[in-house]
Every structure is written in structure tokens, then in C-alpha cells.
Amino acid sequence: MRQTTGLTVHSGTRADAFADTGRDTIVFVGSKRSFSGPALRTVASEIRDLDALQCDSLEECAREITKTGANVRCLVVDARICQANDTAFLQGLAGVARQFEPHGLPGLALAFWDQDCAAVPLFAQMLDGGSPHWPGPVQGFLPMAQPLDIWLAVIRLLISGGSYVPAELMTHPVAAPPPAAKPEPAAKPARVIVPERVLETLTDRETEVLSLVASGLQNKQVAGMLDLSEHTIKLHMHHIIAKLEVKNRTEAAMRYISATGKKP
Image (cartoon, rainbow, N blue to C red):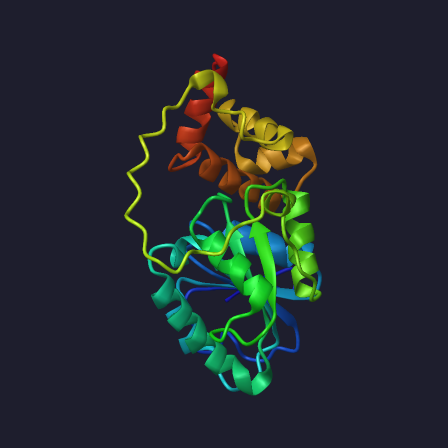
């Protein structure tokens, strides 16, 4: 557990992680690659009186929920953990629901990077007709590839009990998965990175942050130049690394230099 300006950030397994602190809590279920420490700290520092927690899996989440009456307002599940096997995911979801049932179930939302991922139709179906595996509110979606202010605004909406469906999913309705099994789709060809286009997925702010990082500045220095918190810069870098499909900030900086021709 880490205290940040009076707010609480949990990551990993702790027996008291879900104890009733008298504060609203949002739980992110997925790997630290999706829900990093900087991301959790940004949520906790930007949204007043909110604790942010991260569990690697639904099984871990179910184990850590105690009978102390945790005040979890929303459970956000990473789409990556429910794409491989819908049955296993739904069973894990039911296990978490059983732990919450004595105290009432929180809202449920799906965090996704790609609207074409296999988990989106499953959640769209749950949003429309409910699910016996989660007899509580299904609140919709948390799109991850969004500017920070929009991302935080959606989280605020979810913890206040609202529902959110991105415009792209409303414009192109997602059909429910067909009952009959379909043959495995052919593997997608390897993505070809075109240097001139590699930065097109970044927002203006993310491009600005990356340009300063590529010039050799540390997060604290970038934060000072842009009048932002260091936690916010770390979250921007987290999104940049995910969008560019690189492993770390050094590779992201090299990708920027290669695309723009600018030298550090």
C-alpha cells in the first residue's frame, strides 16, 4: 500500500487491500502493463476521496475481497484477460460476484485499447441484456487510448454510477457473438511500421511529451516545462509506450527520432 497525498494506491496481493476504509474505491483487474503504478497514482491524485487498486487477475481479486464491506464503486476489467477464453472469464467473474454479494455488487466496465477486440462484443451483450455471471450493473466501457482528461472524466462518470459507451461503438453497433463456433481466423500479418506515420496515433499532448523525452529530459523536467505533475507525465508515457508498441521510454524516444529526423 502506498500513501499519495492522503490517498491510497494498492497493487498486488494484500489481505487488507479491500478492507473498508470509508472511501470510494475503483479496482482495476489486469496486468501492471495496462494499469501501471503511475496510472493508479494519477487516478488517486486527480479524483478526490478515491482509492485505486490493481489486481493481476479475477482470481486474485476474488481472493482479496474480504467480508469487511469494501466500498468498491466500480470494477474495471482489462479486455486482454477475457479474450482467450470467454467461459473461463465468465466463471472468474461469477467468483468475484459471489464475494461481493453480501455487500452489493459494484458497477462493471471493460477497459480496451482496440474496439475490434473479441471482448467488446461480449460486454456489449452483457450491457444490453445483463448476465447471470454478474447480477449487478454493467456500466459499459473505459477506452484506454484517450487523452488523459477524457480518460479521467470517464472514470469519474463510472464511479458516480453512470454508464459510458464510446461514440465509435454507438456508430458501429457491435453484434452479439454467434452461437455456432467459427473456424479460427487467419493470423494477422505482421504490422509494418512506417516511420512517417508512427506518431499519428498520439495526441498533441503526447507528441509534445515524447518530443521533450526524446530530447533527453527526465519526467520531472518535462513536468516542470509543461506545468503538469510528474504522475501525469508518467501516465502520458505509459499511453505512448502502449500506442507505439514499444517496451520502454528509450525505444519510444528512438521511434520519435526515427520518424521526425530530429536528433536528441
